[in-house]
Amino acid sequence: MRKITAKVVAALAAVMLGVVGVSALSASTANAGYQTVGGCHSGYACLHMSVTRESDIIGEYYYYGDYNLSNVYNNKMLMNNQTGQAWVYECLNYGGKRCTYGWRSAPDYLGLTVYSDITDFTPINSVKLSATSGEW
Image 1 (tube, rainbow, N blue to C red):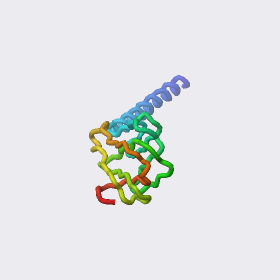
Image 2: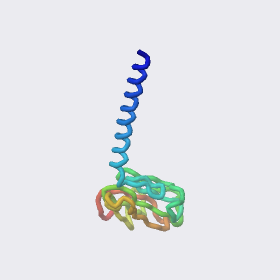
Image 3: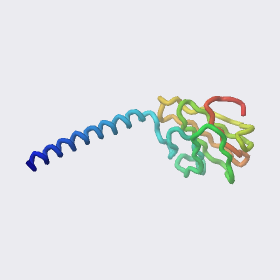
Image 4: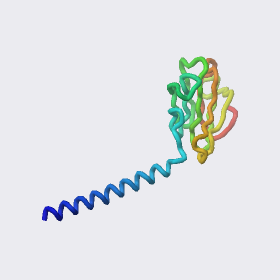
C-alpha cells in the first residue's frame, strides 16, 4: 500500500509541477514585449543620477501626474519606459507647470526601444507623466 501511495504522490507532484511550469511560461510569454532597460522597469519613467543608463536611478515615476524634484542638479538622463505611448515632460515649475520638453514612449511592440533625454536639471523642478500630449 505504501508503494502505491508513494507512486500516486509522485504522479500528483509531477502533474502539479507541469501546471506550475505552464503557468510560468504563459506569464513570461505574455510579458515578453515589456523590458527593463537600464534598470528602469517597464511602465516607469526613470531619472538617472548621471547621463548614462548604467548610473543609479534616483527617481522612478509610474502614475500619471506631477512629481516635484528636490536637490536635482546638473546633467541627468530621464528615460521614458512607460507603455502605451505615454508622455513624460520636464517642467520648470513645481506641480508640472511650464513644461519645456516632452516625449512619448515607444509603442509596446518595439520592446527594446526606449526614449530618453539628457538635460541639465538645474532649472527643472518637476516631471510630469501624462497619457496625452499638450502644453503644460
